[in-house]
Image (cartoon, rainbow, N blue to C red; front, side, top):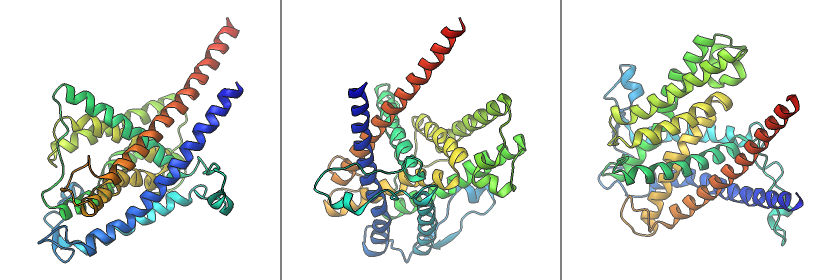
Length: 338
């Protein structure tokens, strides 16, 4: 038991150090975005001065399509919303670095960065890491059967970056708020506060009072995730049929995180998948002088991927331990009754 406890503490310490490094990398991507869009020439003939077509599914549904706005201005608008959402995740419900002491940073001895596991960004990084590992497994399995996901990237890196940046906010408003939050509110119709507050953070405002309510909740989240996966293929984006499985898994994670922790955390989860990873993809292309979209020689991405994989594996290990303990307790209760 002592060895096991020591091992768990050691693994938890490693996990928190990697999460702290990921926090630094993710924060750095905010500034990389400004640099790439406004201070490089990756778009060649297209720059931040150019007009971009706002060809988003959300706008099409609202009957507003074929709009064009200055790429730089729209990018800053999206960028600002993400920064606000990111800050919310850093500070809620406990500040990510509240236990991070000056002595820990500069001490000669290696100490655990005591990051609060209740922090929204901490939770987001852990769940995204799990999703990242499962996505790799899904992709590898599907490829053995000749099933591919496709490539959403456009020939122009700047336009690809712009649309990948815009997608998380558009898709979270459409699929989480409208297609998940609204049905939850209307079907259960037991929210504690206002309708708007329920759409922002469902679990804090929707009252789940029975097993029937739980079944409805899980069914709506599941259907929402399947629709989210299908939408990636049905509505274009150069995705192939293999994307349905991976995107549905992502939709399942996003749906649960949105319900449990609120809109800000689902936006940031999605933002990491699109904006953050692609920021380092473009930065690596510039720094290492490699072709756009090349990953194997992009050392920024390789470090990022390795960190997410390690965190994801640790997350699986830690939660499998909890699951086994829970099952063991149930087993003991059953034996006692017998």
